[in-house]
Amino acid sequence: MPTPGDLKRTALRNRERAVAAELEALYGREDPEDAAELARIRALPQADRFPLALDFIARRTTRSTLTDTQTQTDRSTP
Image (cartoon, rainbow, N blue to C red):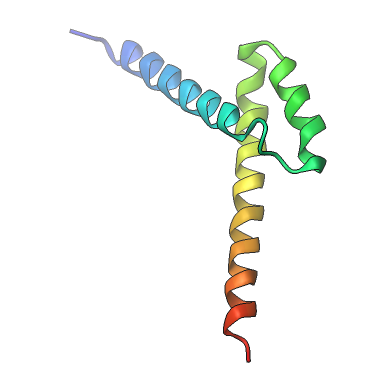
């Protein structure tokens, strides 16, 4: 039976894999201003990449959500 430590390590590995997959999905579709930062993150060793990738994805998601909200507002404003 897995120990609580094993479960935590497995959860962390799964989260790291999900972040890596999200980062790879963004690669090639990034905005020009994000290209340099994304290339820098991808060049880091896997262990160092995780926190920076999380921050990058969170900022990009927030920016995308704000842009989508503004677009919807623009469409609904007469």
